[in-house]
Image (cartoon, rainbow, N blue to C red; front, side, top):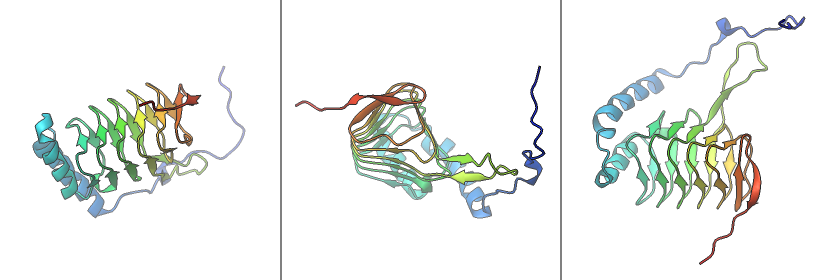
Length: 190
């Protein structure tokens, strides 16, 4: 038996009015065409400089010797910043309507989903809300993790495989699970 609220407020998506500018839409159209013809086919490691060049043409800020796999899907390159000596692995999704910043010496493993936007579920027309993601230096995000809107991953933190992170992660800590919880402090031995 379904339970229904007696409250008269309701989600009214007929009133949804968030739209991106024509410039944004045309930029994403051009980016998607270039992605399929000039970025995605160049999947060998020797083409990482070429891929970074294409991303920079679309406004991404990419550090030196950074490797972003050809299968990475980036919603808006102009909302992406990646530091030096970092790596974004195969089939990562950067849903960066809000900005995504990745520090240096950071690894984002395969199939990770970075989501920098959400909707305000408390307002009837369900408006889009942009919440940038910040990933610090020396971070490792293991395979198939989800990093939610507005999350900040502190320097040296580790996110375990398949973890779902919705809150800030303190520097030099390891988290895992869904929702992600503190596991232990991270220490580096020489």
